[in-house]
Image (cartoon, rainbow, N blue to C red; front, side, top):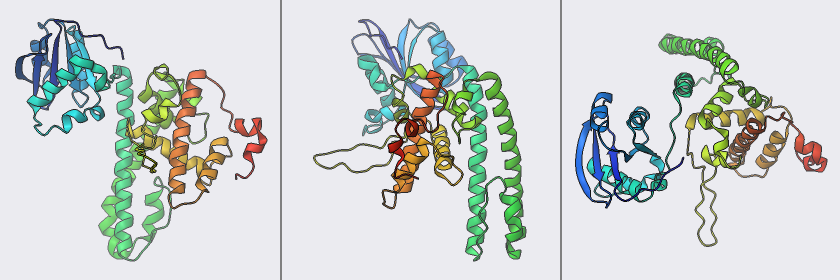
Length: 360
C-alpha cells in the first residue's frame, strides 16, 4: 500500500471507531491538536462531517465498521490509513487508555510514519460478497463441530463411547449407539446437527459453482489433493492479489503459520505459530495438511516431507508436522497461482530419487 509523505500544513485525523459514537482528534501540520470531538458512527453523520473538510490523512483501526468508513472517506477525497490492530501495541499498552487518547495516538503515529500502523487494504465489494458466503459456511461448520463435541462429551460421562465417524455422517452413525436415557434428551441437538449438515452441503454446492464460474484460477490450486473449492476460494479471496508478495515464502508468515521467534543469547525456544492474518484460511490449510498426512493422503513430496518430520520424535512432533505441511502448502498454492504451472506431486522425488530414501 503506497503511503505518501505528510507535507507541512497537512492535516492528520485519528478516529477511534465505536458502535454508536467515534472519537476523533485533528492535528495540524505542526502536530498541534486543533480539535477533538465525536461523530455518530453512521454513514450520514460521517458524510456530513468529512465531505466539506479539506483533504487530510485519516487513520482508523481495522474493524467491523472500517470497511464502509474507509470507502466513504476515500470518496470524500481523503487519504485513508486503515491500521492493522496487531501493530497497535503502543495504544493498547497505554496506561491512560481511552477513546480520546486512542484517537490522538492514531493521528500522531499516522502523521509521523503511517507505515508503523502496517496499513491494510480492504477487499473490493465483489470479493467481500463472495467471502461472506464462505464466512457463513465456516460459522455453520464451527457450530456443528461444537454440537458434535457436546454430544460425545455428554455420552462419555454416561460411560458410553460413540463410534468414530465423519462429521457429515455423525447423526446416522451415532443414533443407534445412544444410551436409552439420553436418546430423547439429545434428539433436538442431533436434529440441529442434521439441519446444519444439509445447509453446509448447500453452501458447498454454491461455492463450487461460484469458484468455477467467477474464479477459474481456483482450478490451479485444486490440483493438489486435499484442496477443494472451499479451501481454494478462501485462499484466493484472502490473498486477493498474488503479486502483492515479493516471495511465495512470505505467504506462510502472512497467514500466521510461521513460528514465533524470541531468541535471546544462546536460547532459541520452540514457540507456537503467530496466528496472524485470517483464521479461516489457516484452519482450512491445516485441515488439508491433515488429509495429506492422513491414511488416505496420496504419495507426494509434501506427504513424504511431513511424515519424515513427524518421525523425529517428541510428543508434539505430529502436530508440528501438520502445521509445517500447512505452511509449505500455502507457499505451493501461491506458486501454482502465480505461475499457472501443472502440479507435480513427486517433483522433488523424481528430480533427486535419493531424497526420498528413508521416508514412507
